[in-house]
Length: 82
Image (cartoon, rainbow, N blue to C red; front, side, top):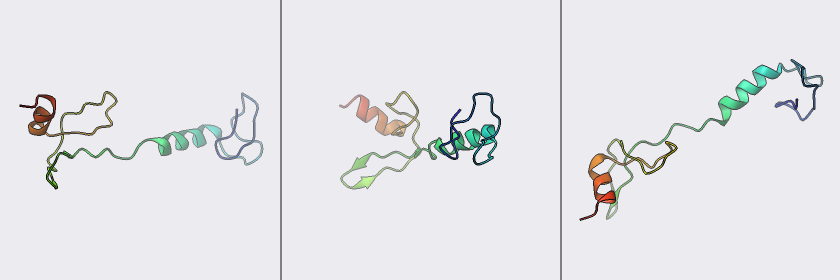
């Protein structure tokens, strides 16, 4: 198992790195936490001639939760234009 702290390759069953002595389970857990995305911007980015809506967004075209998030009023305008 490769150490997430340093580039040392450890045996598969190792619980701590032979080179830097970091506990591998803790280092992996901390690495996963740091790779999580920052808080998602949930405010409506609809821009009407330079004025951004800014209401709390509840609808998004993305399937992974990343946004952008639109308020229900602007979501309707984007999805079903008049």
